[in-house]
Image 1: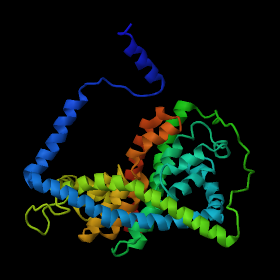
Image 2: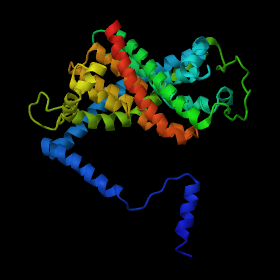
Image 3: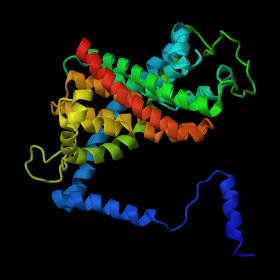
Image 4: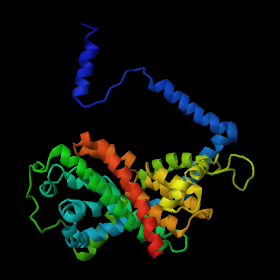
Amino acid sequence: MSKKEPKKEQKIKLKQNIKLKKEIGWEAPIFIVLFLSLFLFMGNIMGGTNMIKTMMATAFDLLVNVCFYLMAVAVLAGGISGVLSEFGVIALVNKAISVVMKPIYDLPGASSLGMLNCFMSDNPAILTLAFDDNFRQYFKKYQLPALTNLGTAFGMGLITVTAMMGFPVPGALKAAFIGVMGAVVGSIISVRLMIMKTKRYYGTTEWVETQNAGQIPIGMRKVREGSIGSRFIQSLLDGGKIGVDMGMSIIPGVILICTMVIMLNNGIGDAGVYNGSANQGIAVLPKIGEYLQFIVGPLFGFSAPEAIAVPITALGSSGAAIGMVAEMVARGKVSGNDIAVFTAICMCWSGYLSTHIAMMDALKTKEMTGSAIFSHTIGGIGAGIAAHLFWMILG
């Protein structure tokens, strides 16, 4: 009986949707080899002690000079979005643009509210609406999974745009808004590609199931209790608190991803030798960018090869990508066109590789996760290309 117990236990876990693998398999030795190879390669160039010291110093520099700055931006953006929501501005905008959602995205007008929520906050914000029956009742089954792509294309939009327009780069304000236009193009590409996949899988007739629709009357919205002044202060502070939470949530991504990307992107710097100071590296990504310049140059128009590090970082964390932009701006490596393309890609991708799987699982449509990731990859590239073209015309 003892030999059969592990099998029973495995079946129970599988029923609970827990993915299992053998205790010892091929992943461990391959990971060890790749992990050690990377750090041995970096340590051989920088020196082992200098590599560790640079890693720690860069992480601290990112925390103090980038993460806290982004948190401050997030608090301001959260407070503004809270006030706009409390006094019906978001609802008004939603009403105004809902008529274009069906022909452009093949989604019901209600989805525009999810798009705006994500723009004001982050990708998963659309999930709070996706579980509201008053929201779900407008969707067919093939449309619901596309909310992941729509929300992600606008996730952290307000923070991204605010940060980008604040950089001391000529034409940054115009470039940030051009980047938003590029992100819109990317969102259309991503959602439409996803809709093509979901139509074939789910068909076009079945509606999403609802349980308690009609709790909030149509045409009404929730507001806080108290006077107008009290509601203003409460919504402002509550929105700011959400900004703090968002600022805290992006710290791991900024420090972990951005530290590694900086060390792969930067060179020795002004020091002339590796001495363990912050922001030194082995300059691998610029070399890769030079090899890819014949593709990246015409598509995005980057002014420097190392700019390719920003979209690579945006795959996992848009906050970390913004941190990369801040570091490149300080070195004078960013132009107006770059700001436009960075805004479009950072806003459209929004670290989708780190959120898409969880969001699709939450929507109970994880069978379409691969399609969602593929569609959004193409959408982000399209966003960057569109922003570059818009800049050439309008910049």
